[in-house]
Structure formats: structure tokens, C-alpha cells
Length: 140
Image (cartoon, rainbow, N blue to C red; front, side):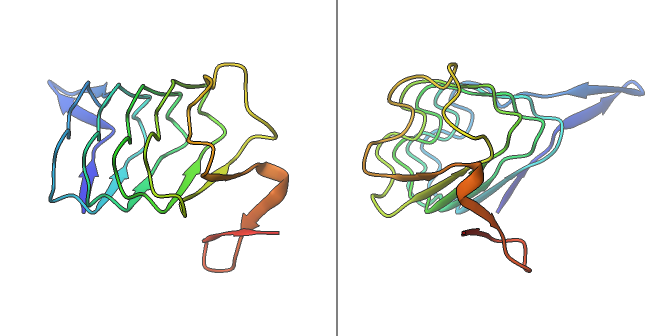
């Protein structure tokens, strides 16, 4: 598991972070990524080709997910928080066909680019899913 901190304390000042372009690209060790509060942007190709990545936690501070961010991973289940205003094209390109995305919005926002997710991946919108008693997303 990799924990991606949301901020650094430098000279007694909090500096909020973004996950940079290609930051974890080709990392074959990461199986789960827990992105902590404070991260606002996950840049293009941040986790591309992390073929063992099966789970990611995206906090409600993230507002943008870049192109090819999670492309060529093995993500099975993703919850996209309501805070995400922009998802660029191919953000979830070539993830497994049996992957499920739970979006915390009613329908695709205008700034979620075309082709943000493959057509064969199931997306459930806010009114179609909820959380079970263990905090796991489930279809209503």
C-alpha cells in the first residue's frame, strides 16, 4: 500500500500537494493507493501502467483527474467523489472489463471529457448506489 500525503509541513507552513505527471508510472509494486485529504489534482499519467494496482482511494479534496491517470491498471472498484469537477479523456483507459465505477454525482458533468472511461466498464451514478454498513459501495 502506498499512502500519498496531502500536504507537507515545511518551515511551519502547510504546503498542499498534487500528484505530479507520471509520478508512479510503471510501478509494479503498488497494489493499493490511499490518496489522503489535501490532494487536489492527480495529473496526467500519474499511475499509468501500474499493472498491480487494484484499489485506489480518492479523497473529496480532489477536483481534477488527468489523462491516462489510471490507464493500464487493474482497478476493480473506484469511488469518484462529488468534488471531482474534471476528468480528462482516457483517465481509466484499459482497466478490466469487470471494473465498477461509483460516481458521487447524478450524471456525467460537462467537464468529464468524452472517453474518460471505457464503454464496457459499468458506471453507477449517485442515485444508483449507496454504502453498506461496512462502508463499501453497493448498488441499490
